[in-house]
Image (tube, rainbow, N blue to C red; front, side, top):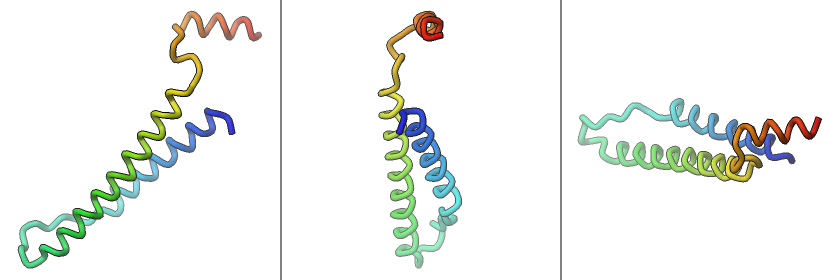
Length: 85
């Protein structure tokens, strides 16, 4: 698989993780002390969703770092494109 496709998959996964984090998070009810166990479960769920999102972002950054041309200026990249034509 080419690097652009891998990058697109990483971005898609990160977007899905963000969507799930926003969609699946229940409203946090900290007012009712009798629900301490429920609040603790909600906090664990939030931590899990945040961890998934951070891992997706890290993977996306790793793929971006492997893309060619990051060490070249725009002029260098344009010259390389001109030579390829």
